[in-house]
Length: 322
Image (cartoon, rainbow, N blue to C red; front, side, top):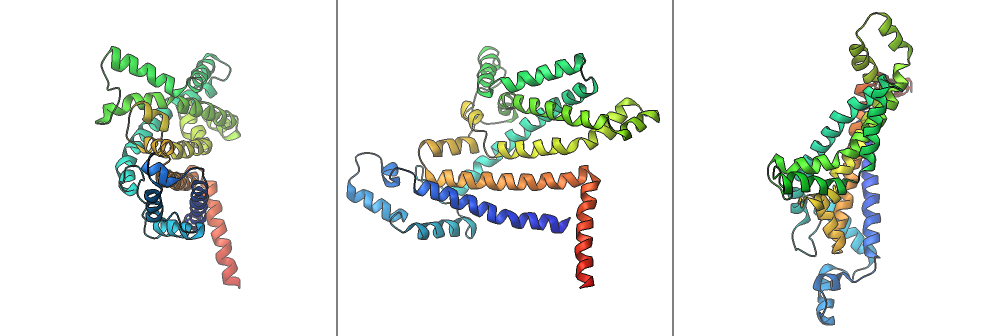
């Protein structure tokens, strides 16, 4: 298992490098003059030439690409924002924890509500519990998060005055964004859990567990749910990776200075170094999320862990035979 994790970590290197090269190339050949973007209108051609030279824009493409890769992956320097002049490393260190907290709260709300709804729907297939759970899931996936966010602000901030409408501070500032962002996750968890549970509860070992007189709650939670965790773990990894990359719409609506607003601001102002750093960060987060998902696969399904161990044993046996 340790060798498998190491191999996956090594595979992340070419993936992230490829993302960095693609993003840098797109930003390089994107229409527009970066010097003009930085200086604004009315700048003389002499000043524009000075800015291009200071940024290294006059160098050949391969020289600029090599410098970018070296600064990013050897010196761990993501550069400086063209618009603010602030270090992108400092901006990410400041904003990433806020997005992380919001993502964790949103994900937990989605799981706490969505997984039980999926279990209820599967256990009561075709019944009223199934219909209600799937109606809630359909409602959750149909409501746009930005529209729900505005309704929550009007109700809880403007009318009732219970919660802040925007900004950042204590945990209360995360409640409305998390509620607005978890509806799609609730729907996804409910539908995925229902589908996985329906496949499991028809299995022979579930029938055997019931025939032994085990309580239905134990049969569902200990036997059925544990064997239905693989698709649930998958959706958890992908959703967390997407959210940590930046919940752009919600962070913009609630004025949360997180990764989402950083990337959106960079795109709108054509701040290429910020956009490049955001894309690389998203690639790293997704790769790590998928690695954690694979590790949890082995925890949830012993057969997968046994497969890793057999593969390792075969390789050791082949080396010994040689």
